[in-house]
Image: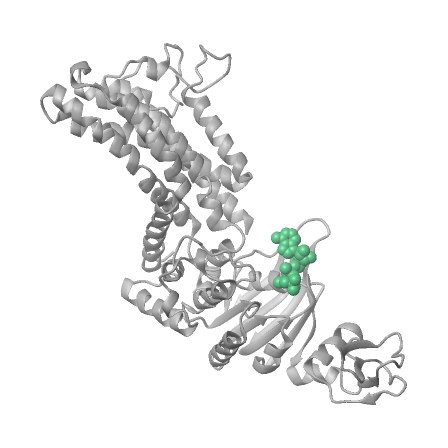
Length: 263
Length: 284
Ligand SMILES: Nc1ncnc2c1ncn2[C@@H]1O[C@H](COP(=O)(O)OP(=O)(O)OP(=O)(O)O)[C@@H](O)[C@H]1O
Ligand SMILES: [Mg+2]
């Protein structure tokens, strides 16, 4: 595709997909209560906070678990609405490439939806900064948001959008919620179930939270041992992020392939 | 702009051959695409615009082979399309939607797009409603937005599928003059069931039946199919088994029949008579 026609495609997709997510009432109906709940759980009085960095790391983790669920479930319709009959035919008759448009759709949708979780984490900086007596938690909060929360949210939303293309929407939403709970909360110690929880494959953000923000290691490996549940450190946290990046890329690729095959 | 179609086949699953080895060529002007429900008109138009891949066969638009990615993109830069089923984004305003479509067509530069969008909104009489959400538009207004988006890239080939369905008479007139104007220099493929639109607008007519062209000619050629086969018969007189009644008045039935019905009086045929004759009796 020529660069001169690629820029308008990317710009238009980012702009209008973001605008449509802003106007997506169901997203806010789900996300506002989840964000408030995250804030209630993640908030702490300065006197109870032992370390500001750890506090914001924990806030990113909790907010991620709750809000990502809402984001994935409500954004499952993003690809299919632009590719199904009617709108799909219109778009398919234009000379753009889905290899650029679908990733741009994901970025735009997530960019808008992640604003509320970001606000929650940033609000949690206030007691952390008071407890620390400095602004170090501010930078830590941004870093925690980016490394703990965003990668899992990107992977789950890519999965949701892909499932929305291949399954009826309601089923895709239910499956998305199921996958999220299964891969973040359903611990093998509680349920006799094979799950990615407690391994490098989990999107919960436990490895970066434990490696870089002083969170308890239990969030990363759930006290499991084995090649997929190493102790959290910088190397394993990076490996976890790499796994999530690969998941996201693979799901996007599958979505594009499905969309192209549909034609 | 030339469009060449050869051996075009589209199979949608076991037993559904929407296109069945169709060969066609369009060389400028406004072509009316007619045919009964399910004949394959929409499928053909989707394939022509590159939005649907054929199972077999070849489509070449302005020298670009749609089978290759490069050829398809090059062709799509000059194609405007209005599908039969319009599913616009309801949560955008008309203006935002057109700007988004213009971006997908690769029309660069905010200013250029803005002025194109403004121009298109006024061409379809929606300049006052451009700021309203599409969800609040009436069915006819949505079709007008559909027409507007098809014209955004100043297309050399315009493919419009039942564009006037649901338009009020005034809008239908406006649309006709718009298409007549565009058809002076470009190729327009107009899929429709409204024969009035065809007789007013089209230089040639293609009829699809069961996925293949069963007729191609001028509007006059099509009318001629019913010449000598169109009659007025007094109401109450039996018209014969093979005659098709195409209209009735208090005194007369208008019929298209292979031979003169008793007390039948030959009358000059219309395009509708020609179409009925073609569909029911064949082309002679
Ligand atoms: N996506 C699809 N999946 C399965 N079958 C399809 C699909 N699209 C069209 N068909 C079938 O292909 C045939 C041709 O359909 P098409 O929509 O092209 O007809 P048409 O001439 O446009 O009809 P109409 O005048 O009703 O719009 C029909 O038998 C239809 O059922
Ligand atoms: Mg049709």
